[in-house]
Length: 158
Image (cartoon, rainbow, N blue to C red; front, side, top):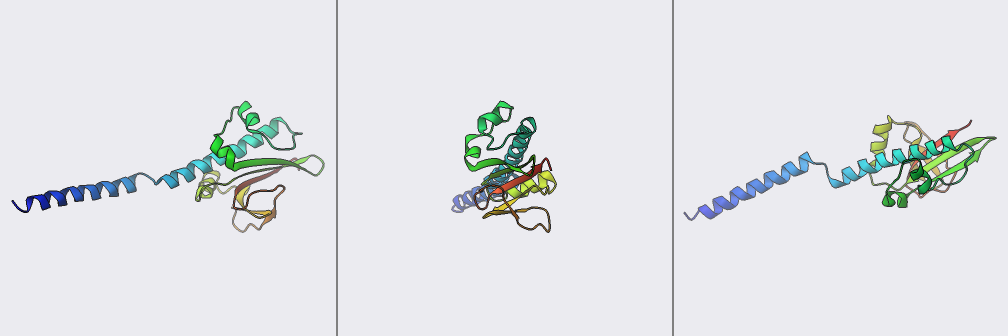
């Protein structure tokens, strides 16, 4: 009888340990989910800016949140607070579309996976960016971007 409380305590401690193990191995951590969601949102954001420019080929400047929402692609205020874009001219009629955002660690992995390693995506470092494509070298950015941002750089109208 004296061992009964110890046995009950050991039993419930074992159940708690099993529950904790299962909950951490079955469900991904919150940080992983945030990185995946942020990466997917950034891809949608870069695509939305490009679609806007396709409809407005002479546009130069920053595509605003209301302009994106007007074409059916609204983004959350927290995401927009860390994101930005710039459409800059080059050559006679070309445009460089630069989209960027400060995303959680691991978001770039989601972007690489979801886009098949699209060379238009990469990371900024000062006034340059480096594509995720293997063997890429740093390229100058056409606009000011916060250091360490995930970027998408697309040139159209070559």
